[in-house]
Length: 513
Image (cartoon, rainbow, N blue to C red; front, side, top):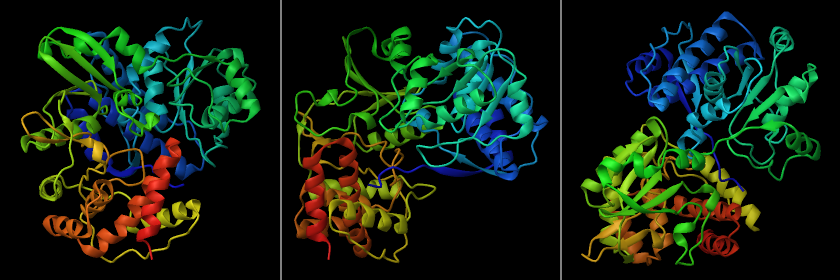
């Protein structure tokens, strides 16, 4: 099943450096700097065919470490150190890969800082970050460990069989280090093969496992695709992880927002499908954002992880625009990646065609996207692949209709709409799904028209009225309807919800020629 997709963004280096230098928020500056450092290091890797050591790479690591020092000072509530000197580079443009951990999964750089501080290092370690996100996280480990030696490597190859390519000089740099090593990345995921590739490299150079400390984003085991040898080694190597939940215990959310909501009496973790406890609704816990309900004398509030850096800021801006038109509950603030909103009281309600049309028309007109998500060609291939997995291959030629990308809702399920006691219709979970860790991304608003028809059970007449009200192209809407069902069937396959898979498969095959 094809469900997930990585995002890469072309970045003009000089403009990015200027923006980072002028950014007053050290957290945003760090996330941007980590992304740019990944792009520059990957560009050098592509040119040389391997990771290598050079004055340019050393300068890049020192520059990133300077931004890590400023973020650490903010976390410690210390005066900010001087910004790092301007980065010298001849590179004009690079491709920056979205750091999913920062954007979606509450992987906090500060957690790696605290993890590194918890280790009693005999001497400063040589820190190795696994790109993409691992380079920035490694800078935080270096800051926490008091290390000056910071390198990064790019795992390549099949997802479950990653490998590293390093120059002879790079290997000699590792071989010559007599002290401990720190290996840093998010994960491990299904196989842990990126971590395994780094451990293979170090052990192949004669570094004993006792000299290596691994810094993952969670304390769990390798995923189901790990081979037995890597699983045994993972159990043997020292691993140090501080999770977002541990950070919240040290610095509770209620303290972060105390000036806005006052004292909090009850804190409820609604993550991982827990918010559905009183309703038998399908859930995909691994893909859900962290969310916490706060209750006190001022009322009930929901704090939801929206993303670190610009990812969260963009979602908060969308939230404000949607609230101004009375589509969603009021968003109050975005702090340290958490978006605080009023808790919406109400009952599940099926919206009318007119209500959905007004909502989607606003998104089309006022929430445009700078870049589209998956191309129509990719969606057609996803449709073919996923339908074949479901037992009957569907091939559709994408229409030639121009796509006008918008930040679509992409979550128009019936349970996402409520009507308040005052009669006001509210849309829940309306911010993230055009910028999620999946294939779809921003699409023409016809994607939401197709999704609304599928999820809300609109009749043929209602579907046509909705399409006309929003101004969506008919051929594009029809193509999207099939692609939408194929995508949802794939998504719920990964979620382990066979009843949902069957529902979408049935609609897909009923509507397809």
